[in-house]
Length: 314
Image 1: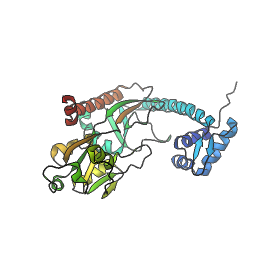
Image 2: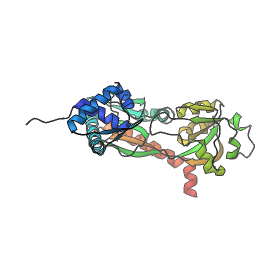
Image 3: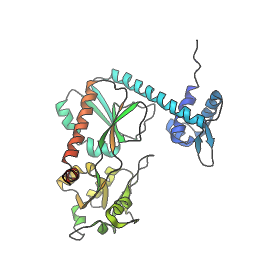
Image 4: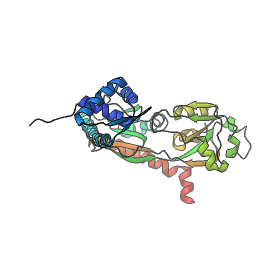
């Protein structure tokens, strides 16, 4: 008995459009025009026998049928991704591919990974910095480190790094402030902002930090803006301004004195990073070794972080 399958290219277009709620962004991801996405969606709607999207003024929203289909397609795609990861891993030779958010790769993983290789010289590690969503044409990573977006079919997550946001600056800039620096002293800047350009990521921002410090709702002017946290950190080291960053990304700079915690006020980071892996796992020992080592490194940071020691003693 033959299987009656939906048009598979249309199903792929639908998955992207349902995830983005945008034909234009789905087309950008799949490298086709929005019109091509619309054509594929119409094909799938004809196959289903009803509309999958409601077209509104400047956007599209899922119908109830579309929502049900989207949930099931997400689960199916998750299983396909996991199966592909297992198949590709089977062809590898003691290599582990890990994909990370840019600043985590630059400021947390890259400075540490040599210690792992010292004890595991037979394992090749590929670290790729890139967007959280990878396309179907890209190799599925064995491990990844990103902010969580909730449960995703085909993957499992483990909390890795949370930490606190701290206001930091180069010592020469701090020397221009009063001897007993308070958060209010930073209102006059110069302040460095981080504006993430990927959906689902955002900067808690100076407004949240000043409000938590008891200054109420203030909208400070920013002198400089970056799309990546590690670029803001590098500018901060040169004295370009004050930066609000997670403490686990400036651990080395604080220890060696390149940066100074300006006033000691810390705001809990509400955007923790997770270690993510395909589910089911490929079951390769080298992936397990690297995964467990990364988790231990994160635990060591939490155990030795001044912020966490203060919380435990308090």
